Length: 208
Image (cartoon, rainbow, N blue to C red):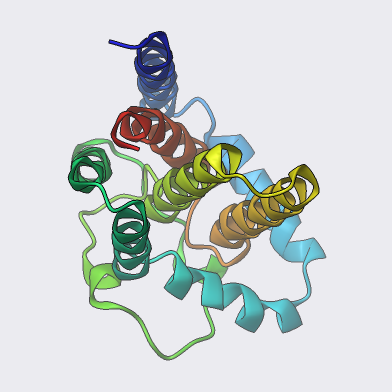
């Protein structure tokens, strides 16, 4: 096995350990006050005129959209082994559903909800009961990590690589920020989802 692949596995395992440790602290309600205070401060300082724009990130971050993006990545790669990317992607969602079903961490109350669109994908109606970890966060970090990895491996000019990666980081930030600003998740949900997304993304690099 290539040394690079062992490195991917080590980082995958390391981020998963971080996810487990952080999940334990969330289960012990260690960050409850911080979650509430951050949500209040963000919503107090962000005018509601931006809610409609940020609500589109709820649609972009859906399971359906990101599954399609991953399929496009696989087709572009033109390698059968790349289809195995769906294994860590789906595994992450099994862990997400398990966490939301068994880790007591209620989502923000209705008074914080600021989603403005009238449309939702079917996957958004699956509500196991709690909000930890954030599925939008894990999917976004997972897919953005895949694309950044492919950009690094591509033969495009460094200046374009830098520009594209900056755009991806901005997109990633807006997605994670919108989860809290729209009152759909607490900050701890975002962190947990991001750690899970990073863990499974590094594992998926093995198939690229």
